[in-house]
Image (cartoon, rainbow, N blue to C red; front, top):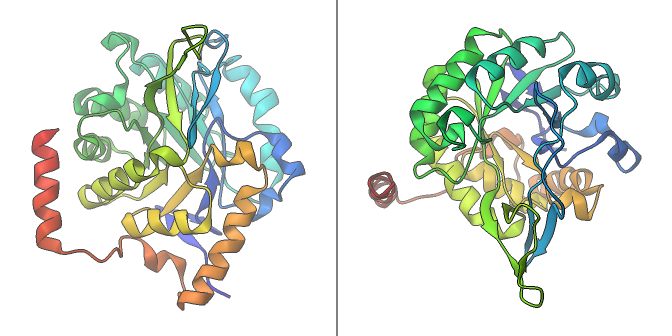
Length: 316
């Protein structure tokens, strides 16, 4: 049987498969064994109490879904007392995702959540920055650097910077996160989208616009993972439209060390176990002894690729 273990910085995972934040809950333990996953990424918490966005919050689209949840939160104390403990019972690293409105709030929240039972902190800097007129931190390398540097000063924990695919040049943003002290990059999140009910003539989401996820965005996500992998030396965790083992392999060939599964779990809560089983089958069929050997091993015409990436950077 193939070795599915991977290393994300200093963290060793039994396999490269983990949930995406916001697409996973403790109730999923009824559908799959959490001890078989690579890591457990819990829904984002913010230092401020949030009610979330107006309903409807979810809308189905061809090959995907739109969501505008608004990251509801009851604050850090409630999270530590009620949300985090059930996940720590399993023999799987726990990743706490943090969302905040300002750099100072990020720094405070990260400091408060740097607990012994937490293996990694995921800083969701793809959320709106109130100090920049609501533009996401990760839309710009300067705001990315400031947020990540503040987080780094306030924790000794490993932490990953979760980026947004809505940035003009994700590679430059990823480099800024690396230089500011991030231990890994999560690439990425949802793409901004909108849909309209043609009979009522109203947006299908209460917040009008929301994040597009699912298979529809996978080719974009794979491209962005590859751009980040070619730019940074820290691990890249791929996310976007993964629903089978072959999708995981595609992300790894593009440069991902590990992956996060989101929308597919809404359709099938047991999908991550099926993906892990499929990775064993793929490795056996393809003669892959160690799955980590796949990372970045897409076969490319290097000259053409370098030319294309230079064009993409200039266009961004």
